[in-house]
Length: 164
Image (tube, rainbow, N blue to C red; front, side, top):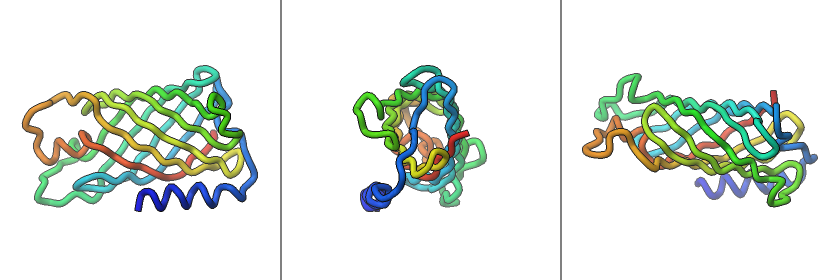
């Protein structure tokens, strides 16, 4: 399902007009999307601010909506907030004016991790994104409860990006 969605996004995007993906210092991106992981699905919000030609900093917030009751996840288990750093490499790899890839690091309330994402801009203000994230170090490394594992696992997200 995930691979099919990524391929569909890329195939549909070929027919659209190109747009500038990452403009460097002062560039602002807002993303909203859905995330998928074991034991739940949710909603994600990101805000990225360009600090230089190829890097940005930002915030990432997520809330897990579909969690089984048997896991016993309260509001604190369902939500997470991350500070993030992105290396915007679309122009480095000469992917064109409408494609960006951005590996990065994030420091959250639950862990320290990394992410890899891609954006495809259809216009100057609208894009679709896909992103995968994984924790490198968890704040509590042993005997995590199922509720504590919600934000300490591989997560796949996709959604819409807007230039602000």
